[in-house]
Amino acid sequence: MILLLISAAGVAGLLMPPSAKGLLTYYSRTGGNEAIFYNPSLFIASEDRYGLNFSYAHIYHGMKNMNMGIGKRFNTLNLGISIMNFDYGDIEARPDYPTRDSTGYYTGNDFCLGFLVSRDITKNGRIGFKIKYIYENLYVYSGSTLGLDLALAYMNEISGLSVGATNIGGTIKIANEEVNLPAKLSVGYYRILKKFTLSSDIHYLVNISSFECALAVEVKVSDLFDTGFSINYRDEFYPGFYIALQPGALQITYGASFYPYNLGMVNIIGIGISF
Image: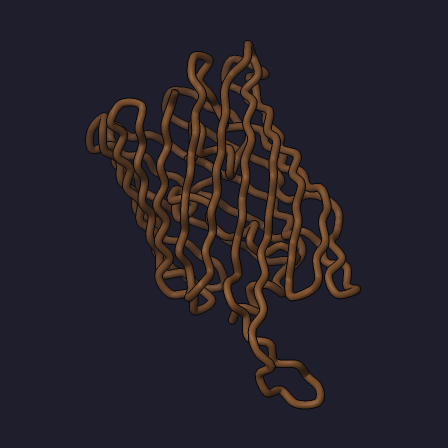
């Protein structure tokens, strides 16, 4: 199962949700500082304060995902930095020769450092891009490369549309094999209906010629509490759940899902603060 996840493309940790909102329609609906992980065009920072987000995901056995983002607006530019580390945990080694018996365990991780810029280009239009340094370590092998995220968005008072590309870049050489980044083309749309927001995302995974999609409903219960539910598809259908508490300058988020690839229940908790 872990080999399936890793072999889908290089640095497969980039395809795993880095925060609680990643279990819903993250491309169309993630806003504020949390958008630094997903859609650079939706990243809108505060001019008066720094925004800081930290999230932790427990996935399967020892697999975990830790991410941090910080951002601030300077004049017309929203500037942000994101840090991601996906730990594959202990992976059992079963070589093809001379036998397939276990020879023990090894570890692996994906690391990504990103620098993001976004800004308005018209009254309702926005553009954003993120340049990323990406490093992968598996067993005794490692490699690195640069990647790019680029997105455009159009938003008004009741709806929004985003299009973009993620993980565009070079290749990483692991064990004398060149592997591509998990490049992805995305389209996201949302519409607000009073306290409800309906949204959808469609993603095309370039390297494996496969589609992913999600449909979600979010409810703004009060100024302090949001929640949402989604039906997602990645080789199979699976649900997503999200809640957010926002007392003042603090935000606490939680997301859960029964993920595909036999990963079981994924739990993600996040904390955001403005200072």
